[in-house]
Length: 265
Image (tube, rainbow, N blue to C red; front, side, top):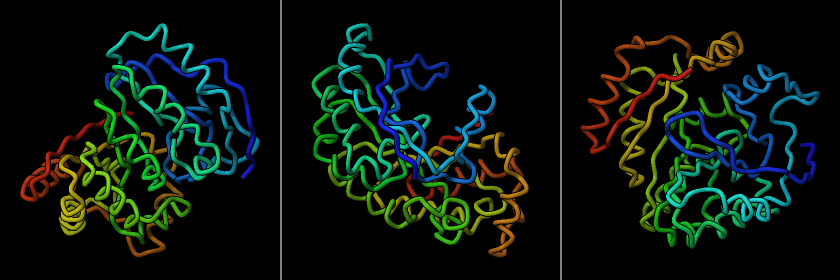
């Protein structure tokens, strides 16, 4: 990993989507480098091509806490602030730099609605702080419960079991956790057996809500994606794109889960 410490000029950015008012990313780049990540696709579209491949570099916003403190003066109370829309706020660098921790401390006594999207059990180092905040939720990224699939598509990310254990510990502390089955992994997760095992694992962790996303940007990675799945004997879909959410809702609800599905490019 190539690590660079930078001083950012801004941190809060208006969110064009309906899930938040502002986005907040403590880092640029991400050590997990998942095959299907949409961030490098967006960077290329914006003309932000990187000399080093995605997943092999990161920039640390060392003045993030100071910048946030200043920008919050212009952010109305009650605003929804979403961490981790273009990076993982709890990638391994957080153990050393604690940037996310500092930002949460700034927000912990103010009336904002906070969400954090992560796939990292490192979030547990802030579990007590998170549990003390009045309006916060963790969106735990778990595209698959099967570590064969995880090792194939996101080999540098934490294991599926470590994520499920982290979800269990967070929910035991009373933290609201949504589990993100996103992106939907065609040819790997779209059959009834995998859906049932996934929902059972999530329900056993104590989480109550699964959000499933079908992202059209996967087309950019289709060849590499298919090759990797075929290497572990997968790649054939048993359910159509239309059938999948119906089956997921039926199985999820039978396990006591609330299921939300979206289709976003």
